[in-house]
Amino acid sequence: MSTVHILDNLRSAHNVGSIFRTADGAGVEQIFLVGTTPDPIDRFGRVQPEIAKTSLGATTSVVWEHSGGHSDRATEAVLDLLTRLQARGYTVVAVEQTATSIPLYEHTPTAQVAYILGAEVEGVQPALVAAADEVVEIPMVGQKESLNVSVTAGIVLFQSQRC
Image (cartoon, rainbow, N blue to C red; front, top):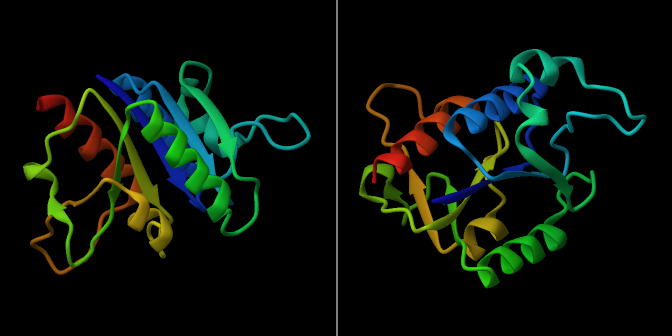
């Protein structure tokens, strides 16, 4: 199975580093950092310390690129990225709570899958949700409506490997 992650406007460098570490452990092929998502290497070529600390070096073992510039909502470039991935045979799956999302446990990943994980507060951009082939959510039974994005990434990755 070939898996990529698209991190849509994440704010926390700690979350980004944690997702890199989990992605390495799960064998993710590539991570696309979108919009305001911090890069492991800043624009001056310096290592981002929070990402380095939480990734434990996974930023060197998982291929990554920044897509769509660093603007707040680089939507057009990201939609182009989704189109290119779909043309290469990837099923694009937004991980988001919507009226039509299906529980993660009912999702059967394809041989090539790209999971979109959204910003800590706003979630996945609506335009990206609309462009996705599928939308899945992790069913919540407690009082909280969602999980931390890095925890969500781990659950999604390891659940998809079970299928």
